[in-house]
Length: 226
Image (cartoon, rainbow, N blue to C red; front, side, top):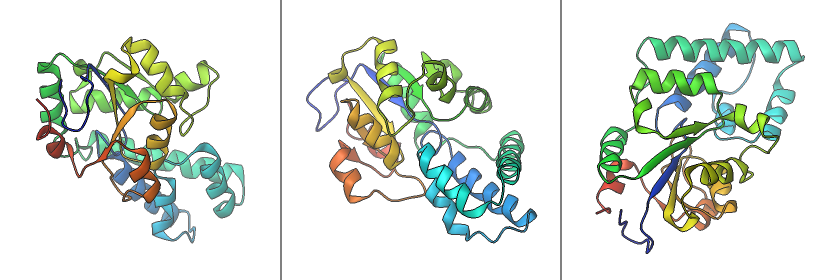
């Protein structure tokens, strides 16, 4: 597949999931707000945006700042996850703009597709089932794989290096799609070209340096491929 602005043919694409393929980052944000209100926690609503694509250490810092105990934090996380799962089953989880058209186009072009997400295996499987997109992907890697392989999560490059090895395509012929600064940094560190399609948070100046290109949605990308 030819992409304007990229000299190498693209034979494989590796996607993040949350906030990129699906609108789950928004659902998590709303679930965070509801869970905090139910527990009487005085957390500013925009503070949750700091968790978008956040590293494990950044999330731990957030939890330490707002929660009195580990049990309170764990209850908050469980309530958030339960709400998102409930809303997903109610049909609130949606593919982001242009995703379905892009997946169809990539498959028609015989491009191998995979997912490298920081979410858990069961959540990825659930999302793929609900959106009816499981058949498009060769495989997916999750946070469970990161733990099993004893490697580091994003922004470390490890999960993308694992995905590149598994998809068995040279780095020059792989393209990554990400929505967060953490994911873009991981792809860059792995030596992979990355298209950023921001979701809840706009691209930073560092993102503009690290990403191969930054687009509003997948429809824009479809205009520059052949």
